[in-house]
Each structure stands twice: as C-alpha cells, then as structure tokens.
Image (cartoon, rainbow, N blue to C red; front, top):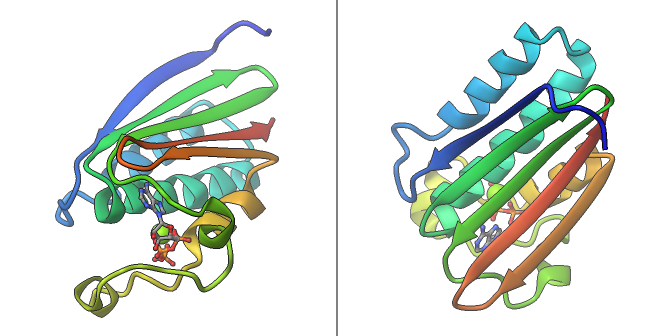
Length: 141
Ligand SMILES: Nc1ncnc2c1ncn2[C@@H]1O[C@H](COP(=O)(O)OP(=O)(O)OP(=O)(O)O)[C@@H](O)[C@H]1O
Ligand SMILES: [Mg+2]
C-alpha cells in the first residue's frame, strides 16, 4: 500500500440528466491538476463518465470514490438500486435495458460496461438484485 495522494467521494443522483457528467468532469480536472499522464486521464474519464451515467440511468443513486496513490488509481463505485440480475449478460457489448426515452437522449447502446472494462487495468463488478451494484476499477499510473 502506497501513501495516498488524494481521496475524494463524489455523489451521483439518480435520474438527474441536468447534472449528469459533473462528477466525472470533476474527476478529470482533479487528475489533470495532479499532473497525471493525459492518456491515463482520458481512460479514467471515459470509465468514470460511463459509470456515472449508469448510476443516473439505471440506479437509485450512489457515489464514486477516487483514491490516488503514487502508482495506482482506484475508482470505487457504489449504488443503491435494482442491481443486475445477470452480470455476464450485462457485460456484453450491445446489451441494454435502457428505455426508449433514454435511447432518444443518445444512451442505451449497451457499451458502457464493456468500455469501463476496456479502459481500466483492473475491473470487478458485484451486484445484488434489489440492493445495488459495486464496481471497482484500477488504473496503473
Ligand atoms: N448501476 C446499475 N444498476 C442497475 N443496472 C445496471 C447498472 N449498470 C448497468 N446496468 C445494466 O446493465 C446494462 C448494460 O450497461 P451498459 O452501461 O453497458 O449499457 P447501457 O447503459 O444500457 O448503454 P450505454 O452505456 O451504451 O449508454 C444496462 O442496460 C442495465 O440493464
Ligand atoms: Mg451505460
């Protein structure tokens, strides 16, 4: 365990499309300020945006915890909500339960979870139906 450079928690509200993207935007700015390599900042920002939008669209709200150590960055995300009945299915490219309304807004391609896994060095997801979902992503710095 390295020394912690930074530890912050960002709340995400369900259903609020007017503030959607704010938490991941803040995370991107904080990482830039810390002087983290811009290619890594981009990968974290993409993963953070996808997970934030999933909380807005699919959950009842939660938070994203950012922990930066000298050579590792963690993004740990927790939500309350319906959970995911079949995680393997949800991880497939193109799988989405998004409503027509949400699709009209440009979401629901079923690419968010696969994008997170692709952009992170380490990815884990645990979900309990009727309780919520936990996603942990790790990035080597
Ligand atoms: N936090 C969550 N809580 C409950 N269900 C979720 C959550 N995140 C994802 N899901 C489920 O997994 C599916 C796939 O998620 P994914 O992010 O890959 O696609 P999407 O959100 O439907 O579309 P896109 O991310 O491309 O806009 C969702 O449609 C939803 O059924
Ligand atoms: Mg998504």
